[in-house]
Amino acid sequence: MTQIATTRMDMAAHTDGGLRLHNVAKSYRGPEGPIRAVRGIDVSIAPGETVALLGPNGAGKSTTIDMLLGLSAPDTGTVSVFGRPPRESVDAGLVGAMLQTGGLIRDLSVRELVAMMASLYPDPMGVEEALEVTGLKAIAGQRTQKLSGGQTQRVRFALAIVCNPELLVLDEPTVALDVEGRREFWSIMREFAARGKTVLFATHYLEEADANADRAILMAHGRVVADGPTTEIKARVGRRTLRATLPDVDPSSLAGLPGVASAERHGDAVILSCTDSDQSIRALLEHHPTARDIEIAGGSLEEAFLELTGEPDVDDSAMGPR
Amino acid sequence: MNGIAYTRFELLRTFRNRRFLLFSLGFPLVFFWLIAAPQHDKIISGTGLTYATYYMVSLASFGTMMSMISTGARIAGERQAGWTRQLRISPLSVGAYFRAKVLTGYGMALSSLLVLYISGSLLGVSLPAGRWLAMTGLIMVGLLPFAALGVLVGHLVNTDSVGPLMGGLVSILAFLSGTWFAITSGFLHAFGQFLPSWWLVQARNVALDGHAWGVRGWVTVAAWTAILTAGAAWAYRRDTAKV
Image 1 (cartoon, each protein chain N blue to C red):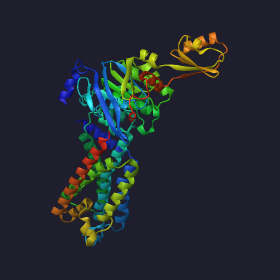
Image 2 (image 1 turned 180 degrees about the vertical axis):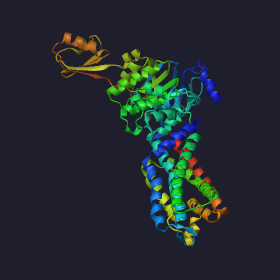
Image 3 (image 1 turned 135 degrees about the horizontal axis):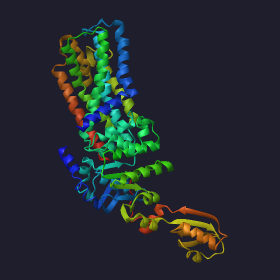
Image 4 (image 1 turned 60 degrees about the horizontal axis):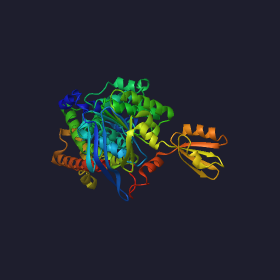
């Protein structure tokens, strides 16, 4: 206890080193042989960064997060959180996390549940402060079994930050939320990150990564396929498809329009792959006002990953478990 | 230190849970009054005890067994909800978690005991203070195997089957251990003595001469505690190995 307290007070040193995964691999036993969920990744995250871990289902995001939280150990390689093994950082109260699945236990009020969690930590933030930050003051007296989906998710967020962590890990936190719930959730998250915290969140929505992180790490098939500022990543994978009925126009001339990366013809329709679909549609209508039945669709991340990795799967084994 | 606040909230949750109030407190209480009240000062032949004393302890053993085993339902529910996983990324140690669970079980058991003691007293059960304490002490010790059983059940079964399993198990144990009627001879008498619940019910004999268990009772309870604790440790490891 005293040891932990001392470590906490040493504010300058305790976030030294940030997060490091060095040559980390992890496999699970699956029904048809081992599933190589993570296949050798190297990642460093500096203290204070907000990073999105981006990838489709089965990319290895949750497995990576489990290892960072000390819930599972890597088969090979090393994981450290603030210069020590993840478990030690968790015990010191430096890590707060919202796992992908998880309900609340019943028969307590929101305030009581948050206080219960706070009681486990050496140096928590005040319960009232945690309720305030997460906008739960108004429903603090309600029993946990009577909350809506969005409220439950906010309580889970409060449980993750009440220990006043230096690292906050969120595994697909908005999956169950509607648009309004998402907006609300992320604005709370950004406010917390602004206190100089290190935040790592997993998502398969490019827009979430773009709006809420400084940097995105893209994972596919257990590997890191791209890592950089979100704007850069967005340019690489954020393609949209513009489809229009436009007979009698040579697709190669369309490929030269601003924001268009490539164009092809399918019967009467042309399909443009756009890096900036806003520019493309303006240019298209300007040059070809007869274009009709126009549809713009976001390319799926899966497609984008295929493009980045160049092939459907790097080897023959199945994708990760989640 | 952190386990204490956690245990306090656990207790609070438990007493707000209607199902607990019904099965661990209400059910034994209703049966006690139904069976014992009409003939509370009559002696049950072969036991030397009045109806009130006999059924006070019998139903207390039922209620307290239920309290301890229902720890299993709570653990199973928390596993299923993902709460156990959430706790694994907190500094709460596994030991402190189980301590909180077992202490909560004992808290429930004590309250079940208390309402039956009060009811018994109202129906004329009168013992010296030392004997009340001795009886309570024996029941607390006799519940140790059931504390372990609760943890074992909690890691072995899911929330759908935990209710029927607990209800069935406690009913059978209560029947074989003489909760509902006195078993004083024959096969059931010989067999019952191998059960931990038998000795829980035998705590009633403290009311006779201050002694209840003898060597056989202590050995049986100790053996079951050891076996079920080993089982609980095995079930826990098996369960958490899967992540």
